[in-house]
Length: 359
Image 1 (cartoon, rainbow, N blue to C red):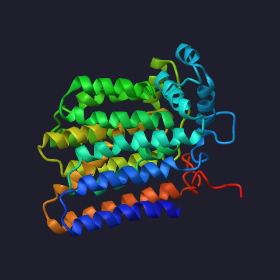
Image 2 (cartoon, one colour):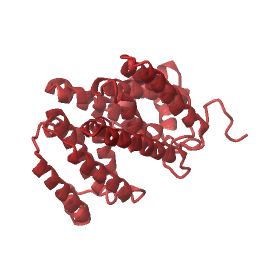
Image 3 (cartoon, rainbow, N blue to C red):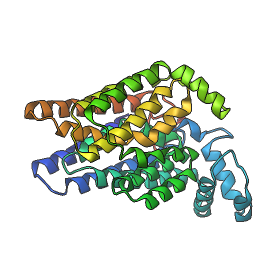
Image 4 (cartoon, rainbow, N blue to C red):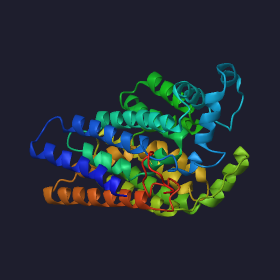
C-alpha cells in the first residue's frame, strides 16, 4: 500500500514546487511525471495483481499471451476466434511474443501505451492550473482501476481518450478511425461513437435540469428498461451490485453540481453531455454488468469537466474551499479503492514482479 502513497506524494510535491515557483510548465511537467510514475507502477507490478490476468491458472490474459506467442503468424492471422479476443489484441500479443513470452513484457507494454495516451489527453485538454486535479480525479475513477485487470479494454479506453481531442476540434475522420482501432482491442469501444454527436448538442440551464430528472427516472425504471433491451438484443448479462448504486449517486450529485455552475461556454456544454452519458451507463450497471464497462469511455470527461465547473465559482474563498474538498475527496476515494482487498483489480497488497509473494 505504501507504494501508492509514494506515487501520489511524488506528484503532490512536484505540483507544490511548480506552484510555489509559479512555473508555466506545470502542465507539461506533471503530465510527464504522471506518465512515468504510473507506467512504472503498473508495468512493474506482480502478475498476480488483476483477476482477469489469471495468475497461477490455465486461463486468463497471462496464459493466452503465452499461447499466442507460440503460434505461427499463419495461425494467428487465420484465427476465426480465440477466447473471444478481438483480432487487434491477438496480433498485439503476437508482436510482443516475438520479443519474449515473459508475461511482464505484456503488462509493461500495455501500461506504457495506456498511460502515454491518457497523460497526453489530460495534457491537451486541461489547463496549467487544473492538470493536477485532472490527474487526481482520473485515478479515482473505475476507468483507471481497469488498467490492473482488463488489459484489452485498458488499451481501448486509452485510444478513445486520445480521440476526445478530435471531438473538440470537430475532426470526424481521425475520431472515427481511432474508435475503430480501439474496437480491435475491445468491441465495447464502439459505444463511444455517439460521443462525437452528443458533444455538440446545445443544452441550456432549463433543459440541463430536465436531463437530471430524466436520469433519475432512468435509474428508477432501470430494471424494466433493461428487460425491454434484453428482448430487443436477445442477450443478457450478469448483474453487478458491487458499488454500482453508490457510484451512480456520486456521479449524479457531481453532475448536479456541475450543472449549477455551467455557463454558455460550448466546451463545458460538450463535456457536460459526455459525462451525462457516463451517468446513464452507470444507472444500468447494477442490472447489466457491461453497462459500467461502456461508461468507462465517458468517465474520463469528468477529469476535464469538474475543474471547469469549479473555476466558474465567482467567490474566491468558496472556489478554493470547493477545490480543496475535491482534492481531498477524490484522493481519499482513490486510495480507498486501491487499498481494498476485495476489489476485482486486486490492487492491495502491491507487489513488484521480482518479489516472491509466497515467501
